[in-house]
Image 1 (cartoon, rainbow, N blue to C red):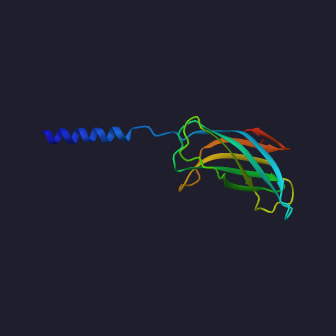
Image 2 (tube, helix red, strand yellow; image 1 turned 45 degrees about the horizontal axis):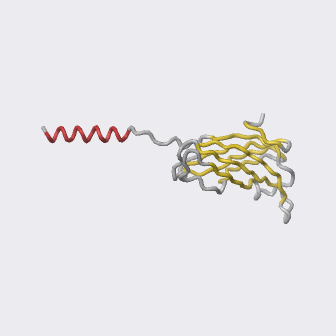
Image 3 (spheres, rainbow, N blue to C red; image 1 turned 90 degrees about the horizontal axis):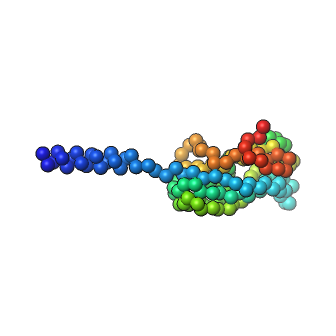
Length: 149
């Protein structure tokens, strides 16, 4: 009887541990600034993107911040670019500024425009089913919040 009670209590403990909530890994991005750049060596165009990450919930060590970008001019270009800033282990209330370059290896001859920038917290080692944490449109030298229409 004692053995059965002990097994029952162990099962309750295991079930109780399985239902403990895990952190949401949420964050938001603000202060996005896009600067068009030209590589002086070969004359190609690319974008420099500055941003501020605001952590809403603890970010696990398996996350990385990336930008999924799609520009329509001068030709259709797509990239998933890791931002190069470490977000692992950041806690609620933390703020981190970063910059990254987009399309600097694409050999674009004209100015990039009409670009959708979607910031994502990517879970390393998993397929790209990431939840966006901020979407912005770069058009006509200005950045606006949301998708490009």
